[in-house]
Image (tube, rainbow, N blue to C red; front, side, top):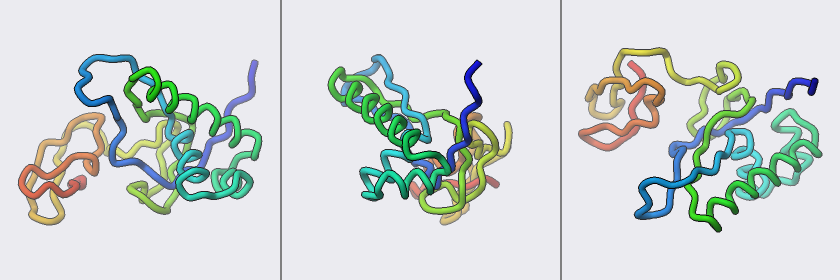
Length: 152
């Protein structure tokens, strides 16, 4: 039996979690986990070396390297074969830091939602909208002014 995965620490939650080729409606998906996205962000976008990035994520450098290779393969597969990229899941804990991930994660899937029901409210204009189950309020846009909503 393989040993359980170490929880990866990430500090970024993307505002957009689904990318697809323009004009495509139904197509195959390439799944990129949140921890793989964090590895790509730290190494390629922030230009951090693998040792420092691995330390920041709380994992070993070889594990970070394997995760980075897997993420790049998923991205390349989507680009070459015209697949959608879906960012979801992974074994991680959201840490305070940059991006939309402002609080601690809640278990294996990172959890931001405060449960079913309720409303999302716009911090700029005060407009309310019904909370969509499974979609964090910060990913919803205000119907009046277009800014990100927050949970009421």
